[in-house]
Image (cartoon, rainbow, N blue to C red; front, top):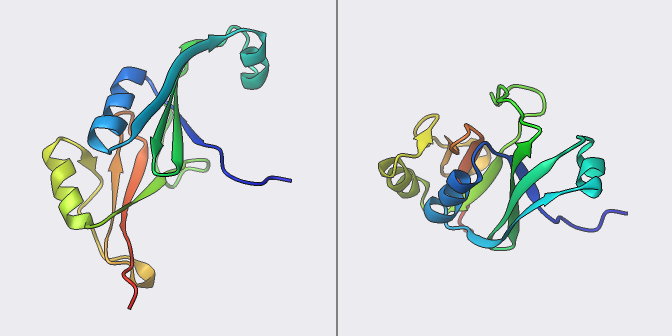
Amino acid sequence: MITSHNHSSFTVSDLERSVAFYRDLLGFTEENRFETRGAGIDQITALPGAHLKVAHLLLGGFRLELIEYLSPGGRAIDLSTNNVGSAHIAFYADDVEETYRELSEKGVRFKGSPVAAAHGRPGVAYFLDPDGITLELSEHIQPK
């Protein structure tokens, strides 16, 4: 029986660049970083000769794993949110409009400016990490 969440993971093209984005712009802290290869990784990934650089990042109780495949090399895929298998992570912000402005000024690419969302949420905006992976800003609903 599954009991809880361990981590979520993205494959990235440049681990250093992605760690800097999530750490320096979004506020994650780096838990650890390592390289791995061998029979166990080959078996887990089903990719003979897999050689990975891995970083684990923390934000609150959430752990994000970023993986760069040194071998075998992969290819970029179409990450449009309407494609089957495309995923995103949603983050809460105290003030979506202010966070949008701050991140935009630092060069973060947004799909559009924040909009009011369904179910009474005050503001939501999609933005992109350095590899074009969709991330979401969402504002907490304040209790009445």
